[in-house]
Length: 362
Image (cartoon, rainbow, N blue to C red; front, top):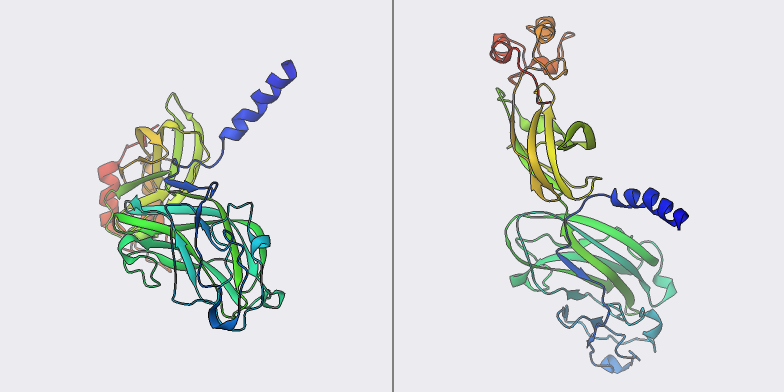
């Protein structure tokens, strides 16, 4: 018993330190999928043994469609049963052109999201299982009003998977990220196809949709009129009881309006203080931020040219050394260009004077 307890004490903390993610928005493991989709098994004078329900097995609340193609002449006699996976996959189709399936509608707010899933696929004929061959698979994020259409205005739409066309793969885990610009109802789904009448099978399992943002916010860079996209912010996750205990640290770029996002943080869920620092700005600490999904906004004070988190005579010395310079000069120091106008002038000296003696939050 002592050994067991010791082992748990050593392992459990390690298991907790995984990339921090918000609770899933939607999951589907396809267990108990009962909806089956079939079409005419005697089209074009040939026939196909579909062994229903293995042609397409879907959860009851998923939708299914195709691009108007049924079976084509020239089909061989094919049994799809070997291509189904424990009755749990939602596609296992012999198809010619694109066939599609998608989830029930999910309300998404603007933001960045992560879709992960396990996938296997291949052709029903080995001659098509070559790079550049006949088969393909796509994942999609679809707007409710657009249905399963190929055109998806206002939504990320259909996108080819990382699998090269024509390549057969065994069960492989994929993660993709996408952005939603407008709040609304969306579906996630998959489309498979083959450019030959020999068909393709695809199975998907353990699908998870979640927010890709662990922390977000907006940083205002004090006394700065330059391009925010040239700057980044360093984010540190601090123990609220002891700021020397840094739980995680990451640097991320700023958008033109100062917005930033952190997608993964290797900390456990909880409440933390968040320290934000940019190149020649002082640290600002935002207290009591709940992760994942929290927000930390701050205005940073300018003038820390030498990066020691204080505005002192050393910063005046660094500015004096770069005074009068522009990019390309031998004495150019981008951190001395405090106002972001791409030259070191009296305006930068004025920023130092205003903030002299300031110290970053500790």
